[in-house]
Length: 416
Ligand code: ADP
Ligand code: MG
Ligand code: MG
Ligand code: MG
Image (cartoon, rainbow, N blue to C red):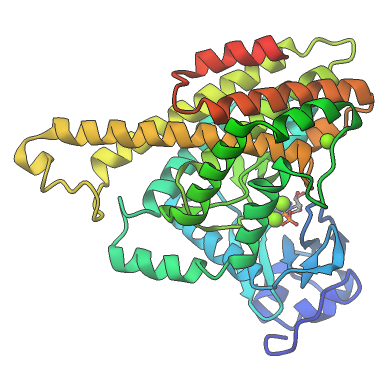
């Protein structure tokens, strides 16, 4: 199978094709004709199969040469699978246990065989259902601090980082999706946009908002040019699978070297959107406890991220930046702490800038969130989205002067 030309798998062809790979056949176990195969991909881009054999159940994820959501009118290269595989190996090394175990990768067939996470469910689904996961704030704060710090010039050998930067620089088409769909399309009448009809007035206002349009392009400028670290690139609540005890990150096909705070901003934006969607899922049973939980998760995620980043700064700062030779080695630990404060301040500001834009693109652009989409009542749907749009505008435009999350809790409560 390895040297054959690319061919998309189907439920029918998968057993015969994958049983030709000895390590997969052995792992899954039993006669391939007895394997149970289901296609479960619910994402926008790729095929995902669950393959259940006599011994083990595995996930087979295969890229298609086009965007699944749109069809073959929108080609997208298979090499995204290569970037996903390599990002997973780095995340596994930098934050052990946070991603599914990898079993096999075939570059030509653009397929990754990995651990089947079970009984995990997608975090976005859990939040819509009103489930309070006790560990996500801590687990994802640590995941981000470790992957983002350890993939940067704060930690890596310069030659290794530059080689990795070159490797991921080829993920051009997926970066292009973010550059257009996230940072530009929401702010003008781009062809693939859509929004809830009740939002027309607010949308017009936002697209005429000079401060917002300048801020959005400042953030795009940072995204496209500031190659600080290997970011996940698509770290929303649909890229996290959870149980009460375990948090796993999946789907890093958008990985590239970008600004450190991009993942943090995207993830927190998805918590804030989950917050603004609660009214739409409320029914007779109050979601107030869920609202408080979500603001608490934002707070915990940020603080765990910041504290772990600071810990790594103090214990693993072995790269070419802010060298100990200038600071600690001269008995000037205070200088290292001052520099850390500046870096964390920049992360905070960027996080806010990226977060607001992520909220806008999920309501005004092509890819919408189930959090809002599943609110059946159109007026309520628009009401929830309007609050999120206003919140997003505020955080992006005022990112340099916002002082604390408490200030944003108050804003969220006032808009909700
Ligand atoms: P896409 O890139 O198309 O968005 P994802 O990697 O997000 O694909 O996977 C799509 C869906 O497949 C996920 O939402 C999840 O339900 C399921 N899935 C993906 N990877 C796993 C896994 N390792 N274990 C269990 N389910 C998975
Ligand atoms: Mg996905
Ligand atoms: Mg994906
Ligand atoms: Mg919508």
